[in-house]
Length: 296
Image 1 (tube, rainbow, N blue to C red):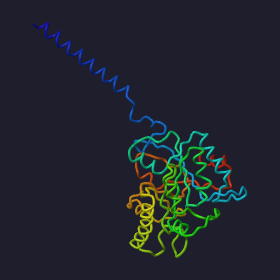
Image 2: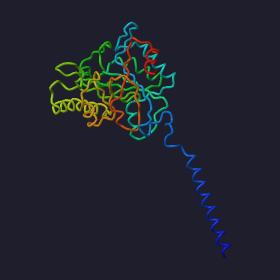
Image 3: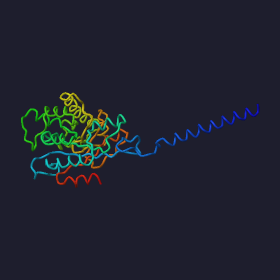
Image 4: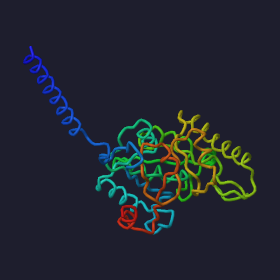
């Protein structure tokens, strides 16, 4: 009886040891919590991040000698798009970026965002064919008052004309262009207000009312024509005040574009999308020099 009891105890001890050893083997075979996030994935915590460069274009010209600080030539634009395509980048829209962070899904291995400000009509003539050619996507930030003006007046001088609402509807349905809110009528520097910033001496209540009314009007107009409310807001001139971003965020925008020149660090925290930095694409640089600036 004593021997039988001792044998049972030994059997139980050996079984316990085997279970413990198996558990250790399983634990050490699993990926560790502090390991690096896989390339392209949205980081699951704020200790790691995915880099996202964003390019900001404005006007495009067919004049090979017309490049300037806010104007690129058609040749420069194609050179940029070719560079993006050949260097392993995947262009994403801000809407896609927001969905990845919100749902915890992965970004492409080497993401980049291409944005165009102000709704210049040259975009649909010169940029869209190149986006299609190189299989890229872009975000177009539209100013509502500009779209209204060029919808009522037939003026298609690509040196200054802006997209009308029919063209915006066309772009929205293309599958490669996201329409962003660039305010209804705050893209100016007059009356003491620069862009969407607060006027000197303006109360917080008055400022919030003015900003939400203007941006809200653009939201409703965009929905009226496209059937979609933009999830992306772009500050004109990058001008903002202390509470500007919180007001815009409270209106339901998931992505806010600024003019701060830096590469963004994307994590799983949606707050990282409420101040996306962008590099202005000046026509005074070659493609190689510009990309060296954002890749260094």
